[in-house]
Amino acid sequence: MTARIALEGIGKTFGAGETALRALDRIDLVVHPGEVVGLKGPSGSGKSTLLNIVACILEPTDGRLALDGETVWDGRYRVADLRRLRRERIGLIFQFHNLLPFLTATDNVALAMTLAGTDPAKARGRARDLLDYLQIGKRAGAMPSRLSGGEAQRVAIARALANRPGIILADEPTAALDSERARVVMDLLRQVAQDQQAAILVVTHDEKIFDRFDRMVALRDGRIEQDWRRAA
Amino acid sequence: MNLALADIRHRLGRFLMTCVGLGLLMAVALSMVGIYQGVVAEALALSRSLHAELWVVEQGTRGPFAESSRIPGDVRAIVARVPGVAEAGAITLRTAEAKAPQGILRMQIMGYEPGRPGGPSAIEAGRGLGGARFEMVVDARARLPLGATVELGGDRYRVVGLTRGLVASGGDPLAFVHLRDSQDLQFKLAPPAARRALAAGAGTGSTDTVNAVIARLHPGADPDAVAETIRRWKHLAALTDAEQADILTRSVVQRARVQLGMFTIVLLFVSAVIIALIIYTMTMDKLREIATLKLIGASDRTIVGLVLQQALILGGAGFVAATGIVFATRDFFPRAVALGPAEVAVMAGVIGFICVLGSLVSIRAALAIEPQQALGG
Image 1 (cartoon, rainbow over the protein chains, first blue to last red):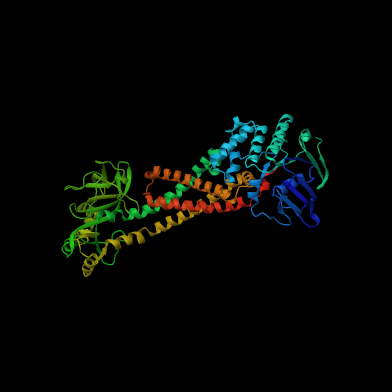
Image 2: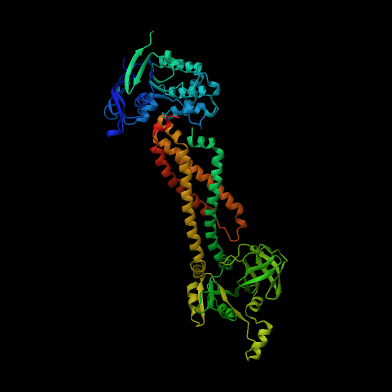
């Protein structure tokens, strides 16, 4: 089975000379389709850096990054249009939702599809379906400022799922949610992983959702300290 | 979906306030363009209204609008007999202050003989001058009603007709009176001065002096050839209407034109800077949104479209507001604000260009925003 995400010896150094900071060091990580992997570790351990490298927002310093079997970086980017890669193959979920405040919930979701070239009417239709699937269909016309934290996070998830990406990356998606809503969000992600055979990589500090992951990877000082699978 | 419009709808109040502010600024610039055009239009208004093809003036002068010119009144009859001339009329021109019901009124007094060239081509209200003396046809700019009485040079004149758009190059309204009345106003000595002149041995002197004779030609007559014939008389000069128009626009109102033109350029430059700053501020207010767009894969074209469309919508809305303001208030200006479709279209083009130019800095800044800037709290 081709891995959705494959990191081989990935490293990242910020700055140079005496002030250089090694944020990630020789990271090897493979995430397969349908797998939900949690990434934990203390602040400054390199979790967000790792996520940003997989999202092609941050360029690694060394190693090799492959997505869906295709080498994306091995000393330099092998893909000319990184934004296209992101909009077609990666779904991103952020801690603070990052919904566009001037678009309704439906349009926030539809935008991801229209950017990928989907007809606007079809995009809106699928956006409404996704919001229904995430049980916030009745809030489809609401502006982000009118949504609760949980609702906004579900809209952000709908946006991440809009183009049926094979990879979903989430940075602290449950940080602003209470325990019950956090579990609902994680259950939704697990459902998506199964339905779409997507690989899901989630950065989290939230211990109450640790049981929702297939695998947990612990980082410390830029290195993988532990990588273990949840008992079936 | 249009991101630019969606963002404007989201911040509609702020956008409208910005448009109003920008509209006022553009209204000033548009007014200046109108006043600039108005100065030229007003300078040519009288000359065009008279339909004169030839101006006969004192030798060595450039006509009654540019400098003082005095010629005998009988020159009119001589000019009328020149081959090619269909009709001729003697005129006088002087600036005077009259006592009007609303106070002192500065006017350009034009004397002419009714029935001969020199009178207004159209009467807006009332009638033209008749046989009686001390009548006046005045431009509506003087804000005198029909029947009003105006005191001028010790005599009382009654307003019998009104014209529209006939003003002097300085913007003063034109008042038409009988040639005889204007000659008395301009050349007749006051009784004490006349008595003193007589005692000193001078005659009472003739007041049959005019400032210019204007002529209309037979169809097919060559104005230059007729002018050349008249110039053979040593004491006269002749100008074609084209030469007169050239003197009016290039000499009489030149300084005003250049002054207004320079001011308009400065205003447009200031407008460009302000528009650029507004667009830049609007773009930087959306820094996080633009970063998010990049994060979810928006192309540079989408980002450029967002900034550019907002700049053009802002400029367009401001220009519509400016045009509305200027057209609603232009009658309150003391001088003509001459704005036609051509001037408005050119100004719209200039504003559009300024908006595009002003958005370039913002586009550059927007394209430099890193997707990572969307992350974090």
